[in-house]
Image 1 (tube, rainbow, N blue to C red):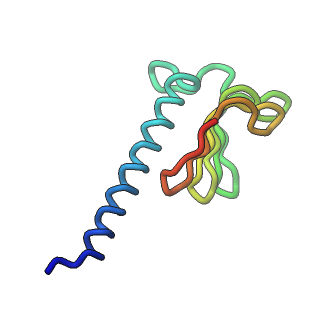
Image 2 (image 1 turned 90 degrees about the vertical axis):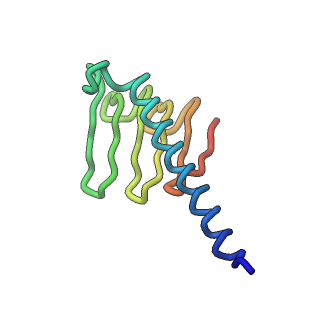
Image 3 (image 1 turned 90 degrees about the horizontal axis):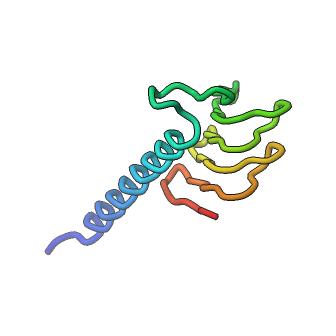
Length: 105
């Protein structure tokens, strides 16, 4: 008799792998559309900052505040890709958890 717990764990693992692959695809698409040139360099007016805590922001800064399109990579593996205004999420964006699950809106 097959062990259903192993099958469930394998199905869950495949689901998580698919979510993470989908996360990477979405983030790369956002970067290509908004932040990078066709050669893969950061567009003029955009920055790529790595912070001492391990987080990273790629996007536009105005008066040292995140503004316009940008991606923030959290230290815990979560990612926010979307619109910023005055250093906060504003407008449309995707918050993607390290697990691959996401919230859009």
